[in-house]
Length: 173
Image 1 (tube, rainbow, N blue to C red):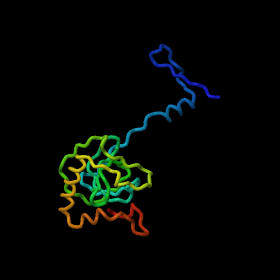
Image 2: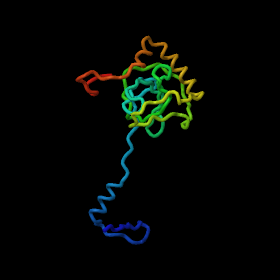
Image 3: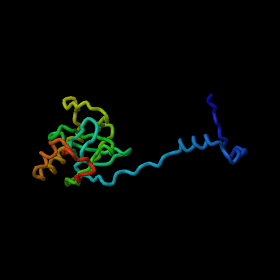
Image 4: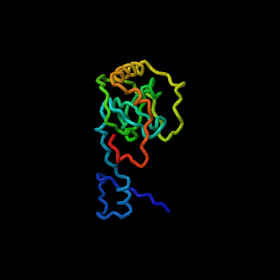
């Protein structure tokens, strides 16, 4: 049998007893708000990151900007590894020590950004993707900065693989 528990507001003129039943206290603890975790501070614009889950799993991509709700704006670039401009949750990105020099500010409309589906092992269909004008501008700027580094195109095109016998905490990226 389920009982509905109603707590009176303080300004109602009635003050409940000091000792609430234990199950009411447990319910209050259970449904109290958890503190929000902070945004990642280790991600810097131009940082090369590895996607750990979703459609672009094990792809090396370029981090561009932090978005609200712990989302990150990233790009492949599309010409190199077939990864478009997309957003993904920050916790699915593995930071590497490689940083590209990107100084431009990007202002992209949220509704035009492709969102990577986490947990989806289905590969991204590049034939269906239509690039918007802003994405093309960002792509050109990023490609210019990639061209300045020798060997960067091959590095971004290669999928990320761990050597046998190693785990992620053992290796410095």
